[in-house]
Image 1 (cartoon, each protein chain N blue to C red):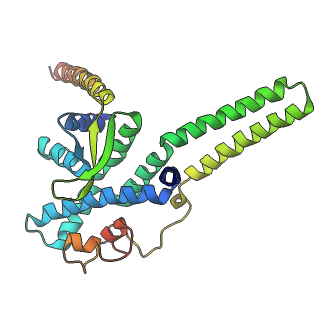
Image 2: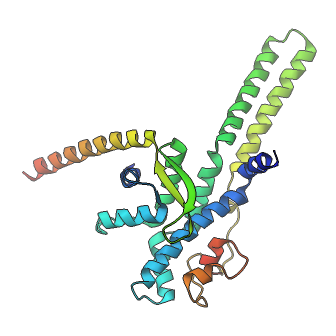
Length: 104
Length: 166
């Protein structure tokens, strides 16, 4: 669904700054591998989010002493997360109702 | 001053942008490979699994390069400036009282159009016009490597080329 990946990334980055691999791992763990997301698809999404000003990035040293690019949520990103979360709740509630009605 | 100029030209340099993106993707692929190695998977299979989970590396790299190049602040400012130059030229051309002022309008219009054309051509992706050699597969793995980290630093090739063998 359109914008879902962005929502997952925004939510993952809401705790702390992370590199792309960390974001992918966190999403896979949280989703218990139920979602089939190719790790690489995160990067174009991250670059677009950076362009929109939702995240910023900087090169730093990772936990295993390697150079990595870390992404951090901006103020605009937090606002976007709130908006997207509310939208997601509304859409999923609407779909649940339709499914219940159709099933009943 | 020298540093500022260098930084300015780097913003236009496709190779610099590509190298940074390759470094980022390589880091991800290395960690994915190590993740599979930690689960006692043999190296060739670990690499295969890493590439499978990652997706089409070349396509992702190209997407990132294009997004990154087209949305750099300096380039956005220059593009907007060229539109303003073009519009200024049109205004001068319409409202100019004398012939020599009309010529200035013409020059501004040409600068605006040629500048935008430059950015359009610059934004084209060369890979769209060339087909890759028949015997190369971006997902084929190099079996001669021993550890993921050593493997990525063996030859003087781009980081991504080190991940993906010929």
